[in-house]
Structure formats: structure tokens, C-alpha cells
Image (cartoon, rainbow, N blue to C red):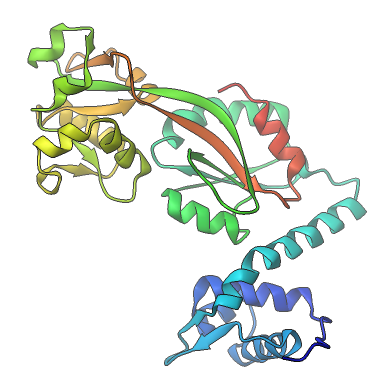
Length: 301
């Protein structure tokens, strides 16, 4: 290996590297970077030569995959771009982070119940900061955050990633939900095992709240073959299914509160030890949007 490595590479080369690392396809990465495919290919080859390391394994039909060295360099590459952006922002001190768009990712089971209270606070505290909201699964939001496509994400803990910081926003208990004519509907509280023999309705694979419900009530899943259970795409779909008499479910408290006065449903608190989740804000440690992040941390949730 050459010990006299030329590190005089450009920020554009780093951007192209990250685009290709995310797209894993030369054509798609070139389109995303608004350059031609030969230009992208030449920039990547030059970067590999300057670093004296192979970043990608080339396959057929423009498809590629990262080498171990390429995978290890992704956090550092994103940090370089963040620092460059921060350098520019500092040099333009008249431009505050609260005057720029903030790209926020939120998991599906949180967004509908958090945003109605979140947006007014953001509008009041930072009226010149547009919020660009991305609803998605945790694993997709993680990738978008690490690749710099999002400034921060709101997810359920645990969320452990190198170079990422988290801040607990709130804790939220789980509640049971049954049809109004169900045998459990005349009770105010239930135990976890009261749902063991019931037809439990769950969110589909990919939703972190699904996994939290399974962890909270494993016996429900054991008693009812999970492959045979109904799996909904949203909590609101689950609620409507319960109202129709298709089964019972478990909801986060903020979702349940919105249906307390629905005559077709009964919301039931779960006795101690009651299951709950922790909802947190996560951002890259190198983010240039620290001012906006600190503001969000101060909101009431």
C-alpha cells in the first residue's frame, strides 16, 4: 500500500461516493448527482486512487456493492460534508439554522399523534424554518439520517448508531382496545394475560411498534399463530378493525386517547407492570443544525 496517499480530493467526490453508496447503482447515483455516468465513474476511480483503497465491488449492469473499507468510510464522509456545510453556515453568520428548511423523519406510529402539537410550536418558535416531514419505518429513517438526507428523526428507543446522539422526548404507556360489546369492555383495567386468548390485531412487518407489542405480550403471540393474525398498515386501520369486531389490539396511549369517545370501542388501561415505549429525537453528532435541534428539544411533548 502506498504510504504517501494524496488526500487532495474534493467535496464533490465525497458527495458522489455517498450517492453511490446509497443507490448502489452508477446510473441512479449519477442521476441523483445531476452528472453523467462517466463523470461519476471517473470521480470514484480517482477517489479510490487518491485513497489507495477499493471502495466498491463492480458487478454487471452498473450494480455495485460496498467493500468493507467503503462501508467504514461512510460515517466519516458524511461528517466531512456536515462540517463543510457548518463551515459555510458559520461564514454566513447572518443566516441562522432557524431560517433554513429542517428535514425531520418520524416513524409511522408516532407522526399522526405528535405532529398536530409539534407543528404549532415550531411555527411559533421558528416561523422562518419550514419543516419537511418524512414518515417512514425506523430502518429507512436510520439510513436516511446516516446518509444526510434527514437532519433528525423521531423514533422509539433503543436507537444505537455510531456518531448519532439521542434525546428522550417522552414516555408513552400502551393501552388495550376492544369492541364495545366485548366481554372485557365492562372493565377499566386489564392484565396483559387477559388478551392471551383473543384475536390480536397487529401492524405489519417493518413497524417497530409491532415488535414492541410482541415483546410486551409474547403469550398473545404464542396462543395465536402470528402468521394467521391480521396485520394492518396503520394504527388507524387497526382501530377500525377492532370497532368492526374483528379482534382486539394494543395501542400507544396517544393514539388511544383520540378514540376514547368512540361508542364502538372501549379503551382499557393495562395494570402494572404496564408496557410502554420511549420516543426520542436522534441526530448526527456532526450536524450543522444544532440550533434547530436544541429548539426542538425544548418543545413540550
